[in-house]
Length: 215
Image 1 (cartoon, rainbow, N blue to C red):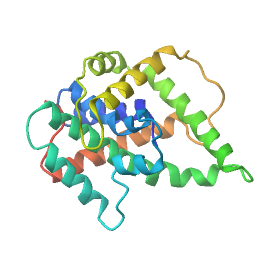
Image 2: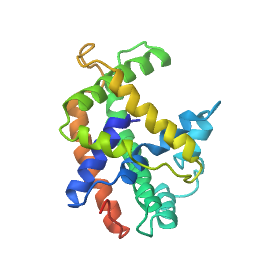
Image 3: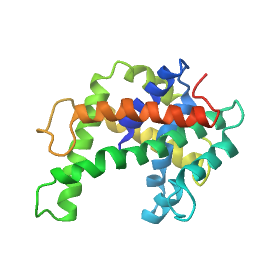
Image 4: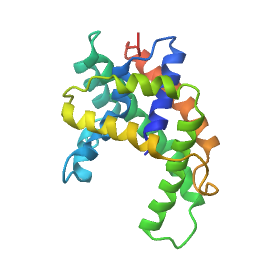
């Protein structure tokens, strides 16, 4: 799945498309589903639950729309967080369809699952670091994310969401710029195309569901 900087980039472009102001809660929501990583002993089943992947006999878009309808109907911090949360889930889905499936053809043959995972995250980490150091919106987003107010949301606690936000802010600030090597599976250019495509597609979903992003 895309890492935090890619999700934040999608959030930024969504608000630009709708001519809306980025809010701290929308930004926080756009990384919140992965806060499950802050829960001790959390496994794949827990992540499936926070990402609404634990029930296969219900249409995924319907599940996401229901979550948005439940939490995103009012103008509040909870509403903006819900919209960001849903944007994250949809971006993950689009990432699988437009990035993960095509990249399988570029995987060198004979690699073990762990070697494939290592290659994937080598490129994904580098792309996120490139975005952190190059994106003109990053300083503003960092400031807004830092002042966001975590709340209990869906299956996650405010503490878990806050811990994930703090870990995200700290991790990127501690990394040095510069490439560790040539991209093998995913390029920066691939990701830029994805960000634009995902932002447009998610904005279209929101328009169909009669909701908007930001203020």
